[in-house]
Image (cartoon, rainbow, N blue to C red; front, top):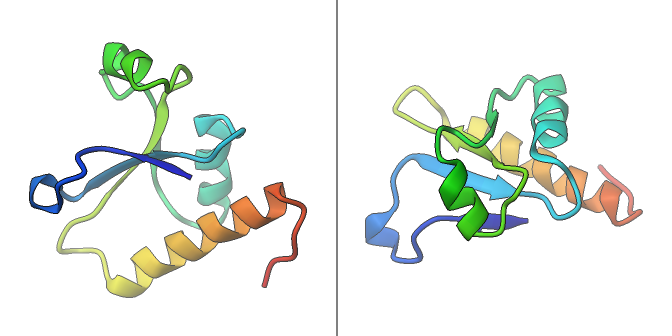
Amino acid sequence: VKISGPLNPNMKIGIVSFNINGLHPHQTALILDQYGIAVRSGFHCAEPIHQIIGAEDGSVRASYYIYNTKSEIEEMLNVIREIVELRRGGEVR
């Protein structure tokens, strides 16, 4: 998983853009949707920056706010871990 954004934690906001190696962002979004996790995929009105960072197909974007619970965020991370394990040919929970 490649996360795009500032390295400085003080510069981070409630939006995370990421890609799972070897998986098109739209495919990632569709898989997450099957688990009831809503994200966006594509260029997010910023195609030039995606080209600069080497994300030629765009990225997956998740956004968090006060309405999201810690368990919702953990569930998304668990699903992403499962996707990565499946792509590696491993077992999932």
